[in-house]
Length: 77
Image (cartoon, rainbow, N blue to C red; front, side, top):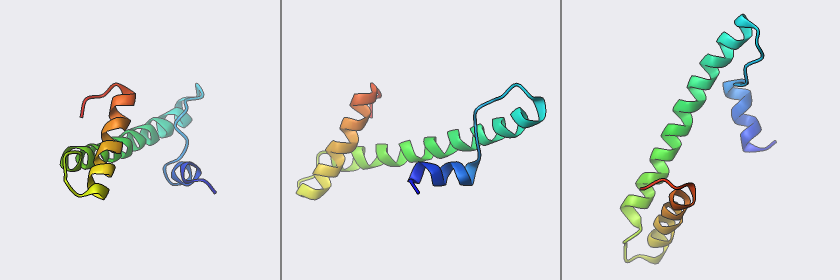
């Protein structure tokens, strides 16, 4: 099982279907997913900010990779 599938099993589906009761639950799932993604992005941003200019190669490598991730998304870190 892929990590993405595990997350969807834990959070639930997020795509609306046009049925009020189902969409109400899926909207709540969407809010949960947004919170998770926001938290994960904050963690990646912290790795970029704290490590991209380090002298230790492994830390610098992680920081640069995290920074590149945001550059590729067009998001400033």
